[in-house]
Image (tube, rainbow, N blue to C red; front, side):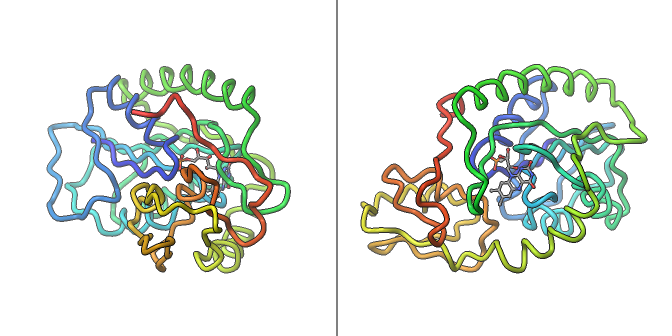
Length: 252
Ligand SMILES: Cc1cc2nc3c(=O)[nH]c(=O)nc-3n(C[C@H](O)[C@H](O)[C@H](O)COP(=O)(O)O)c2cc1C
C-alpha cells in the first residue's frame, strides 16, 4: 500500500510508477480517513510526498498521526525534492516512531523545482527539467528493485545537502511561521474564473466565487499558482516574474 501526497504532480508520478512496478495499491493522503486499512501478510507500506522547506508537508505529518492502519512490518518513504532535503528523513522517521512503527528505508528523488515564492527561487529551465525527469526514471527503477527485496537501511538513501540540521530544525520553523501563509495568495484581473485552481487544490482550500478565495487549510504546495492557465494567481509581488511548472509528461 502506498500513501501519497502531491501538490503539482511530481510525487504522484513517482508513486504511480512505484505502485505499478510493485503491484501495490495507491491511497491519497488527502482522502478522508474513514476506515482502518488492513494489510496483507508482510505487505509493504510506503509514504510518497514532496519536500517542503526541508521537511515533509505538515498535512503528511498530520495524516501519519491519524491514519488507522495495522502495525506495518515493512515501512518506507520516498520524498521528491527540487534540490536537497535536509533532515526530512529523520523528521519523517520520528513521526513514524510516535505511532510505534519503524521506518526501514527512505529515498529522495530529485525532480523539477516548484518553489518560486522567494527571490532567487524559480522553476527549472526546460533542459534541466527534462534531465531531472530522465534521471528520476532510472532512480525509480533502482528504488523499486530495492523495495521488492524489502531492503533495510541504517542510513537513508537521500540527498540531504549542506547544513541539513540547520535547514530542517532552524530555518524550517521560521519558514512555516513567516513564509507559508495563504494570506498572500491573490488572483489578478487576468483571472477568468475557470476554477482550475479550485479543482487542483489538494486540500480543497480554494473556493471560486468570481475570483478564488483561499481558506486557512493551505499546505503551500503552489498547485494553484502553477496550474492557472492565465498566470493570474500570484503570491504577494514575489511571483510576478517567475515561471510556472506545467509538465506535459504527467498529464493523465
Ligand atoms: C513550499 C515549497 C517548499 C519547497 N521546499 C523544498 C526544499 O526544501 N528542498 C527542495 O529540494 N525542494 C523544495 N521544494 C520543491 C519540491 O519539493 C519539488 O519540486 C517536489 O518534487 C514537488 O512535488 P509535488 O509536485 O508532488 O508537489 C519546495 C516546493 C514548495 C512548493
